[in-house]
Length: 159
Image 1 (cartoon, rainbow, N blue to C red):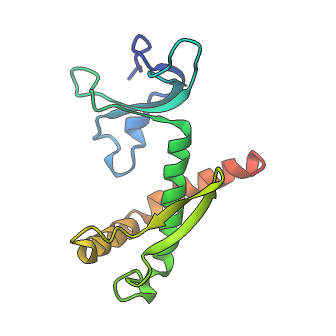
Image 2 (cartoon, one colour):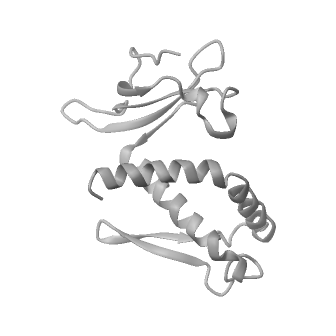
Image 3 (tube, helix red, strand yellow):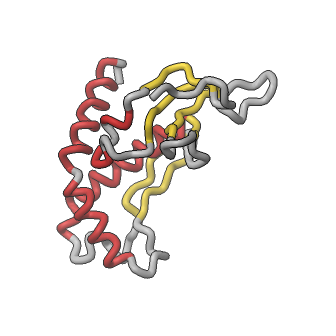
């Protein structure tokens, strides 16, 4: 499906077949495309680029389409990677985390650190963390495939 170019987000790089590769939702998703382009929140003289997931209801482009600044997309990738790493060793804890120290990591970014922690404020955390771990395990092959591609591309870029 062709991504619209007449809206406020101005696509530059597109993946117009995303519905075919949208993980477990492939071929049955409203996420029809991804794009990198000029952000919709740009003001005169200021240009930010963003990533956008384009959703289509079957009749029109959805207001639920998401647009994120590029650094937030990468921050989410970092959060996914660090969380996946945690769950590789989480079996060592009866609750899949240490209730005495819910902080998993602090990852240095821009002179400070992004905290990665178990959400202890969630009243259902003991159950929800088990469900999360199981879903992460169930999707392990699909996530692993994408992480492998990401790793290869980062190496090709010199990182």
